[in-house]
Length: 428
Image (spheres, rainbow, N blue to C red):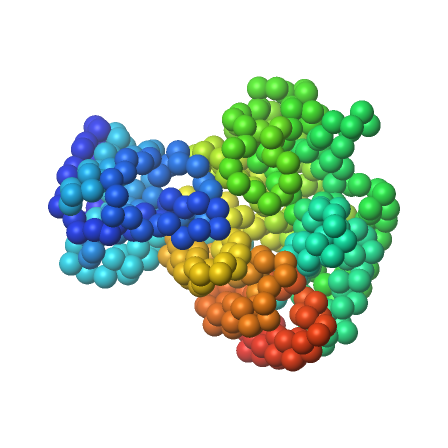
């Protein structure tokens, strides 16, 4: 049933806990289900980790907001759900049927309001991403993961892929390729200038990636900047709140989220024109963990800019919310790390289902085979790989190469066989 509201309306329902609220999460966790009281606006909530659509499930009841005009879900912890619908909002509500089928139907209903998206076949290809292997290398050398990524590292990574007998695919150069220090030593992020000490021949590297059969991809965090960045100096009004969340991407104390502003459009145009012109065909967008309505507005602008340059370039983001994923081609199910208690299994499945039902018409990046743990146990590494390769609707992302298990050669043998089998069944 769809209800449309001309004025703000507050509805109450008797529901059976636990309540499933896929728009809420914490980085690397699976906390979508609750018995506790809460009062949340799913449109302005911080988009930490894998934050799904503005919907709620309780027993066989489904509730979902049909447009981005706002709304609130509140639960008293004793069986009463309150749904606040502002003027202009519409609520999709079902009872007594499968709430997950209702979620799919809801997603299809929302999608009708947006134009169909151009699709490229390579968006579903196997991907390699340097991130977890960078972290492994960093531990071996006692440096940061960002310091570990260099031009030579990428060449070595491609060589190792081929030596293992793995097929080529997309290859994303992850965090650490850009300049992070100003001449006076102050930290800077947001200029997106190549660190030529680490990547002296980036243009040639991109060409060589293509020659070796890989589709070049590159990492950006274009939702944030330090006040020292050029854009922040020229337009201080674009800086919003400070980063105050957990991250593995280094010192975040000076990092600020951008506020949506047209002043950012020429900034994004200059950045993405440069790297798309260099030959990158996949853009990994990361760290959009600010207030969701602001992050969606930024993602929309970034997507418009990229597609105006070349609509075939893959845009990947990690907010699966149905309203966010209208502005990307690929949704990343986001990081999972191993823990001694085995909670990673639930986190993996939890992230996947939030993404699959929030964005059923988008390709999923099943990120990362073997998890984001840089020095995993072989048993867990392979179990997580098998788990992800069984999931439907996306492609696997290889990050930590299995030759890191040099003392356990059977790990690489099984891993390579699993990936090659997936490619044989699903590849082009």
